[in-house]
Length: 270
Image 1 (cartoon, helix red, strand yellow):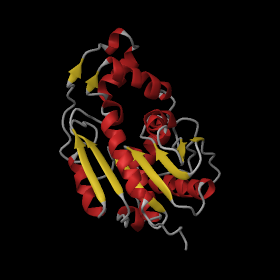
Image 2: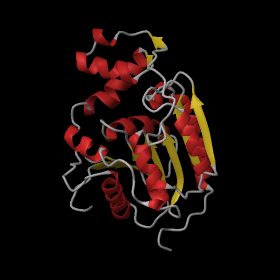
Image 3: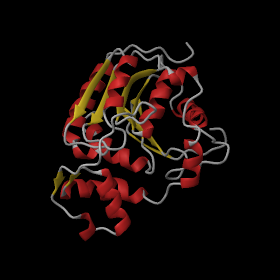
Image 4: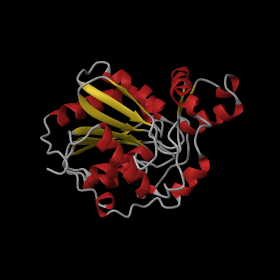
């Protein structure tokens, strides 16, 4: 893909589902979140790539902005999925790129799920507020890990700490911060299809009521772009919504997949 080797893992067989993680982590976070959901849903091939500059996917200087990352992901889709219809899930920055992918491949994407989407529409972002604190991360984690947990989670329990240790902590420190800063300097897409999503397939937009990273109001602004969107803002959930409200996430994703199954898609380029 443009000379950049994209590391990924994949599970299962069947309908492709491409899952994109957020900034500063790698594929392991989303795999830990969604694999328990798909365990009970046979017939899907789940593909989890590391985004450039994170995990084991490098971000050379040729990747100068969001458009370059989008081009890389479009090439990844062509190589891994081809013209087949696929489902697309993104969390945070991954949702930003997922929306752009859907805008470019509107006839191929059979379903789009955006979880705590990061983008240019963030507004009314609340202060970080811990709602549940039944565990002291500093008593069991190193200072940096404890700070990361504390800043990410608004529900701080033994259960969410376990999820952090399994899904988030292993990728901390692996990001190429200089590369991510370089890409962030050209974060706005130049592509009209990316800037103005023309996607009318089954869509799910989830936001955390206490999300102190992107808020929830900006996610509501996205609803007008997606005529078949279900929108839900979840209480007792911040930017770590997938870990803090896993049962609601599973219910909503399962319903979205059922809606997507009835979607008639035309392969890109047909």
